[in-house]
Length: 465
Image (cartoon, rainbow, N blue to C red):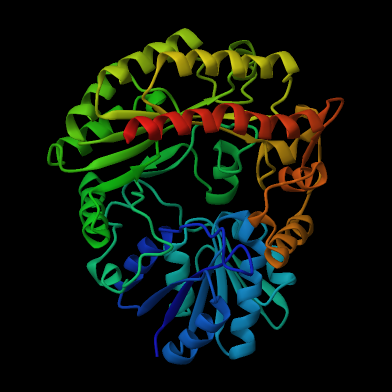
């Protein structure tokens, strides 16, 4: 018998399109340091049989189901139902961004006994101990008892949070875990499409600004994850560099053995040349992910000025200067991402995508990929809160709408298919812009995929061979 089984739920009934979830490793490690016995289960293929087997073997008193990503809403509730059918006495709770945002609705319309809100470590610990409840809402006799945000993580309180060898040694198969390294939390920006931006962070976590972890704890996680996965490569994607936080990474890289590791770093903002130098000197191989957001310079400037996207505006000339500098460094390859379907976007702006991408193709052979994503609706984003501000009609407005959509995705394996028609595309994005030919964006997504994305990927892998 164990105290707690932590579960990462499936998105689809066939187990495909699952998301990695390293956060469970850190929560388990935190609890094990407090003598709570924990196992972690990442559910993918044949998950019903695997869940049944684990419940029979482990006999957990508590089951915690991650509900960080909104598109596992129905999957998480489905697993909660299955656990209760196995043994109604097991206390089942969920936590994460989506769980926090829809806490009351979830408890009133599912089999969960509690929701842990905001930062989860202390809330989960309090549930298991059954006293001094923090950051949670508990359902008892069909009544909700709320113990609100008494625990908000700070730089100091996360100082010792790291993956323990006890947790890591339980993994025979690292499916559901990646070599992603958590370096910080929070965001000072408020991109209109993102549920994890400044306003979302304030609502969900009660946090203003951002926090960084202790460098030694980060180093410990790097060494442990790369050792267990037998890979020298890891991923970083926490990057408020534009607001003066390069110092954290300088301290981190100074403690790494030079050229021992490779790194994939996703930048929210463009790095300085000095930072590129530092990374190139530190790592064996590097993949930089640059989020250009909008490929039309004119539109990018307008949206940045309106604070619809990141307010740091870069000209195409500045961006190319950074790409030029990366090209000099023989150990750096670059991926670039952008958005489609943003406010004020015109067909002329979309034409700018082709013009810029053609220029980049002819000039840089170290770009391994350029990808474009349509705007999709997220709970807690400014887009869903103020749709009229962005000139859109939102097709999912509340918990019930998101649950219905994620139920369809779960039961029909929706994500396995290429979105073959406009109706499917609209269902996927959840957004329809008023007064705009939305079907044009739908067609453009696939045209760009064929004309631009495949072109860059194909050439890059030919060069690698």
